[in-house]
Image (cartoon, rainbow, N blue to C red; front, side):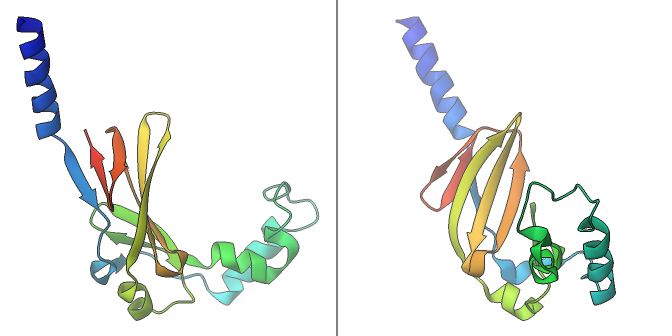
Length: 143
């Protein structure tokens, strides 16, 4: 009887400490870095996609053209709260700040949990934590 009561108290205490994490509003996002210049992108393409480069050898798409390379590398770091993401430089800050969340997912990599918020146009902002999390509705709940 006492064990059951103790288990119920512990379960209630654990759920009382659950943290609900919602996808952030990108209108408050801040661009952290600087977008690469055309010259930097060409230099990177020539260096990483040359005949003897091995960085993308298993990926037949990235080095197929400089346009494909730019899709991957013409990005800059943005932050909003604890969330971070590399967002495309081809979109203006106004366009990025106007996007709205469309989904949330949770994945595990070793001891870390990644909460990924997807926005209109495929933008992704991620938050990493050591807590165990699961998706509930349009939010992540972490213990």
